[in-house]
Length: 431
Figure (spheres, rainbow, N blue to C red):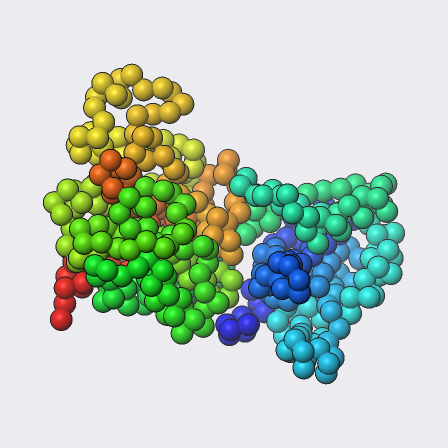
């Protein structure tokens, strides 16, 4: 891992939060992700399952976390099972966690090697009346690929049919959505790395650069600052490409007079940042481009004020829609007649602003959280309104990462990244 070791107090606290919500006589199991194959002997870079990472800090494959607060043996109330390391593994794969470094990482005293899991698990299941299984219940999850967690769940259901099964996901969604101070520091670091990359780009972008060259500049700056790279697949969309919401080809020439939409963010210690900025290729917005830019900025500024404790996200998105409606009328993109005749399930503003305004962010870019509950202090959301005008070859979206405060407006983790159109022009044209 490129990042500094994180204080184990974070993981001790996270496990305590989870344990306090478990039912009496139950245990919970969390598995690492697989290393996914490509073909031949090629594999994807390993990415740890965010739940076992959140609860233990263990960032390697073939790992299992077991939590059993009521275990008769106190040593078995928290257990890590790890792939046994050796000198041979160290030569071929690099250093893995030892039992000692696993304790330093997680704060868990009981660490066994993975082959011991079946026997110990069977023993503990004989004490437990129920088990928490960790299904992926993110609303946008693609669950076609079978995971290590999926295989474990199938085996448990087959081998222990008399045990009561509970879902870990609702607990994880609740506790992961409110960030610890240590987590906020890590997210702030990811945002600062993103900030340095944007400042680099403002000196680099000019007519004739290619979208992939911009991507290369970002990757260089991320890696230079101990990030593994992009928190998600980057969107570097010049001109009409900005009207494709998930444009990721990044293979077109950036032309004089166009605006580039950059939806990019660095990760740090597996925590995401998520930024969108729009930059004029030649260093100057046209009057029309600036009018659309400022309309989006107005909506973003007003929307941020709504991200306060007690807000229901479904109502928040409706309020943001009303804000956008007014701006689109002012820009001549929709009329009052369009609004009068709009469909209840597809308002007129959706023609030019068709996506949601905010999502949870944290260990996952689209992080877990309970959408039906009021938001609370310590949650982190993006705020990213946009206007997309295909007939003008113009797409503008602006996005920052915001921490909900106890009172008042949220704290902007990206407050130092240039946002005002005039400031962007000034930096691009500075000697």
